[in-house]
Structure formats: structure tokens, C-alpha cells
Length: 156
Image (spheres, rainbow, N blue to C red):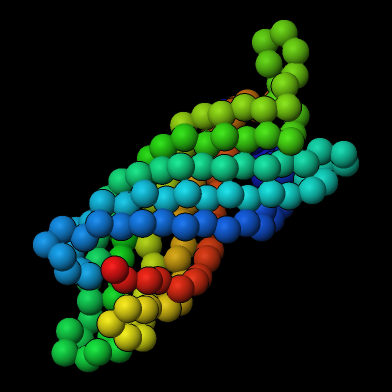
């Protein structure tokens, strides 16, 4: 069923995340195994309704480094992750009564751009991800989110 966009809630969930990646072959490029932890929270997404979410996801990432001879080269990456989303501090409809907590499967696909600052650090200029969850709501029990982020990357 397709619904008019005016029927969907639009809001910003400020939060933070941390991810760890194991690069196969010990290189900062190529295929990597990724674990991503993300937390977000928003107040008054509707009058008197808040939302706090925490997700844990894992999957694969592929990184391609531009200008390999440049020590401050850009690297581009794409990733596909799946996992679980835990939501609380809100109102979720249920078969017999509403609940303040819910959880669902989650899927994330996206990518980003890093610039190498030194052997140990990179700056994540931009990461953009599309995230889908299926938390209970009064509609189709689907949520589609777009997340933009940036930050510091530490290489071990």
C-alpha cells in the first residue's frame, strides 16, 4: 500500500556511532568485515512521544584507495550491513496493548569518503547510509532512514 508522504513523520535523530573493521590482508583497502554500533534519540517526534534507538549491525565493506602513492589519498568505501534495532522511550502498538519498547531486524547500505591524515588517523569526510527497520507502528511497520555522518578514523 502506498501512502501519501504527508502521512509519514519526518524528524531528525541526533546520535553517535562507532564501527570497527577488520581488513583482510592487513591493508586499509579491499574487503573488510565491519561491526557498527549506533545510538540515536529524539524528543517530541509527535506531541509527548519520544524515541531512543540503538542498533548493532555487521557485514561487509569494500574500500578503494585513490592515488595509492599519495600519503594523504582519498579512499572510497561501500558497505552492506544487517542486524538488530532496539527502540525504547516511545509508543509502539501491540496486539493487545501498546508498549514503550520494541525491536526489529535492520538493514543498512551506504558508503563514504575518508582522507588519510597520517599512518594512524584518517578523517571521515562523509558517510551516507540508507537504513530500514520494521518496528511496530500504526501503518505498514516499516521505517526508512537516511543517515549522514562524519568523524575520525583510527587505524590499528
